Image (cartoon, rainbow, N blue to C red; front, side, top):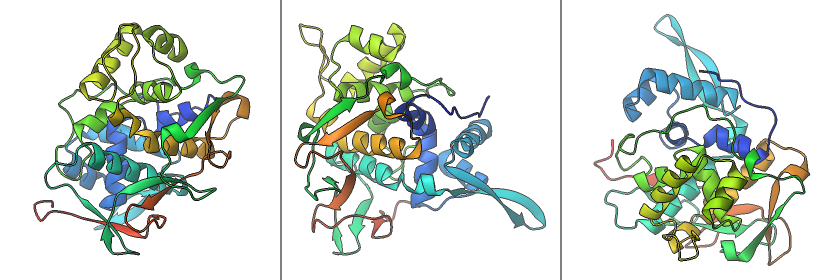
Length: 309
């Protein structure tokens, strides 16, 4: 399997290629939350095959999200994988995903609790604008501007991994929920959601904009409807975001911002999310639902049920 990371195409497409896969997201999540850095530890925690894990780690290195660093293991030299500066910026994306899960599925047992160290309270991350300081910011508070040469086909980057089956993946309180993996489990799903936030509604428009095969599009739309992210098609054949789908906006906004900063391209080929309140391009930040203070990677921690190892 090739691990070459493309150096052209839209920033969004390159970002989706880097993180638009369920195992990649889980590997990154464990690196952030559990400080996992060694092959055997990921293998034990996630239960995926050695070949799959090796392929995802190679991809993360190729994307500039991890670096291999040798260490001594009882006289044998092995590699561990450390997050790069580019990857550390993904912390807010992973936190936004967790926040969406807590809002959308509040009754899941043994869910981790986010504690904001600055105020000492259990908190939910709330999307705010880093330019004007206003929060919360919702999809309805923004508009999207596509560059003159921006094409959704550039979001549909070449696929490197097969989509995991619906039943695959670890099931424990630390892992993302199956509903989340229906949205972020592969790059097609995330591209479809991005298109929905940009106003695409009809099957034929999704197909044309994304350059996606009808069978794949039908499958992903079916999954989104089943997950409660899209309404079933209307009499006019339109798929509209549900409340649960609209609540996913912070994840989408942070992913777009991260991709544009991490893989800059000519502005004509990408999109800008503009915050109506200040008329500036949205600089997404996450703030504490309790005190309103900005959440940083070092100002929060998770507490887990005793049942979670």
